[in-house]
Image (tube, rainbow, N blue to C red; front, top):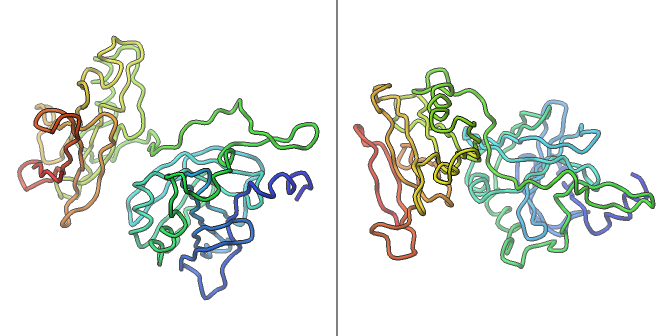
Length: 336
């Protein structure tokens, strides 16, 4: 390790802890380590490789760092797929090279933290690394301890302002953030892959409809297209969140949602495989434009959690509820 590298990172450093003893394979641990005041980690053997995942709080934000024994040779960006018990999620990842323990790192969303706490296994893949599967035994207690107070101003490592930045040494060997690479916020952004072959609507059909509304081209934001088997028939259904669609060349009303957003809420278009294609078969429900919908299982059936503002909701307050298939239609149940 270069001397200037070690000196600069005496206080600002990522630490995926050294591999746990064999007795602890697959069991989450938490506490201090050589380079980390406090964190939660798990290690597994992946064929001939060693994989360590670490959850930590830096600069009052939550992160997941994943270190494979064979690392990268330079700083890099990519999308990390995090699949918990079969549920895939994507986060913008950076390979942090100039740290004591180089690793692929993502800034965690609450939805991903909850999945890691409550799941049984997680499979991780980014760039050419993985897929690697790690057990989540004891993850809830370990992650809770590692993230205690994180995001409230009391998080660990609040001085690590440059933790998630790319770094470069100057002529004197001092490290500085590389500003020209930018710092896009991490988010759950599935890559623009094709929808399943048996999906009730194709990507081409969706794009053809959008082109009629926005000839200049639509930009897809995070969570624009999701899939879930909502009607429990074994086929993935398609959910389009209009809040994540933008038409930069259109009028003000088209800029966000292609005309499907009001003052607070935007339309979610649900394409069910049980409905007849081509006959206005999408179910339209509303969701708050600033609060992403959630997707989980309730009583063995996939559910969409939504939030709306206005209507019968108390002034300036948000009403929350879930939408589930009852065998014939999507039914709304208020939860707040």
